Amino acid sequence: MPLTPLDIHNKEFGRRLRGYDEDEVNEFLDQVIKDYEALIRENKEIQNQALALQEKLNHFANIEETLSKTIIVAQEAADEVRGNAKKEAQLIVKEAEKNADRIINESLNKSRKIALEVEELRKQASIYRARFRTLVEAQLDLLSHDSWDSLEGHAPAIAPEIVRGI
Image (cartoon, rainbow, N blue to C red):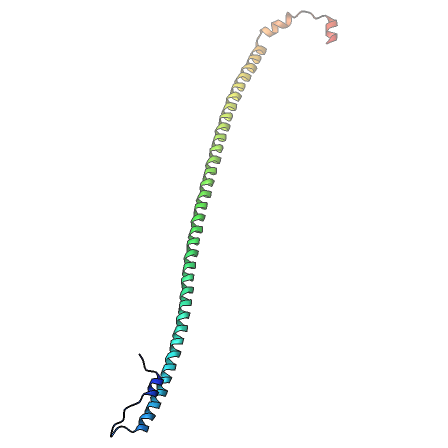
């Protein structure tokens, strides 16, 4: 058990012949008591300061831990948002590609239909031209034929009253 200033103050030494000077010993003990009390006070202050610093250290350690956890949570949230954005972008791109493919396919189908219709119209125009040419040639042939002249002479006389009605 450590000595207290009171223990030092109350300490009695036995007396012997030719012993130490009692006043000198008492003065020294008083000085030791004062120094010892000062050391005890200083030690108490240092302990109090150490406790205060330890509390601050614990407080800052808690803050640091909270900040670390917050940063980790924020990083995870950012990673999740980034991942969701990438997925959404991929879905948008896929949807756009699908729509583009659909539009291209529809355009190709329409283009094929139009090409078929154009080809059909060309065929019909060619057939019409050939028929019309044949008709015109037949009519020209008929007009240039000598039998036309012979028909003029054989025409029945039309009654004048019929001609007036025309």
